[in-house]
Image 1: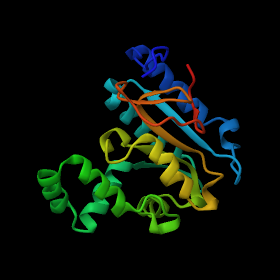
Image 2: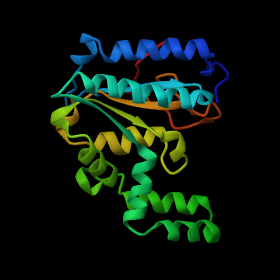
Image 3: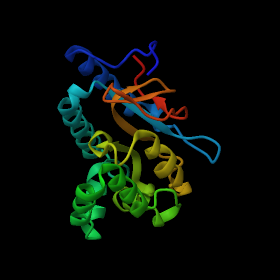
Amino acid sequence: MKNHVQLRKDTLDKIYERLDNLEKRINSEEFAKTSGSTNTVNYWVFDYNPKHELIVRERVDFIQKRYNEYHDESKIYVIDLYELIIKHLENNGYIDLCKQFEQEKGLTYVTAAVKNSLQLTTSGQLNAMVGYIEELAPAESAYSIILTGVGKCFPLLQGPEVFNQILYNMPDEYHRTPIILFYPGTYTEQELIVFNEMQEDNYYRAYRIVRD
């Protein structure tokens, strides 16, 4: 990890202030008009001190419920990436197999096996995570999609893989949908540091939705 990176270690007052600013941004006319094309992306990151996980979860639920209560034709969809992976493993009868693999071959082997079963590098619904997101958040009604649970997924799924292997493979109709990844750790718009402890692969194409 580079020494100059200022890790996200907000106080309680600061996380509430940032969450207030997040909600204002999501509900702003400017955010509603954001759009993507084949040459741009509409990806955002809200990074936060991992110790504030429960506070963030509660506010995400509140933001979704309040927006959806007042809008009939467009919705905010909240999708827990960890729950999608567990659903995939359960539906395919892989849970016990993963336990066996971990005991016999270790976590690294299990991680590779899970990623292979998800077909993350393929496009369309052959990519299991893409198919699940399409099912849960139809593009025609999605005002925005919020992705949570990436911390629970680690190391089965890492932040850069969400962008490069899932969102990159979403159908074209999602290019106009702002997608926000909630990230427990620090994102500098260059570096992703999960849990403020481990640097993941660099990523440059998503923007911090709240910059302070």
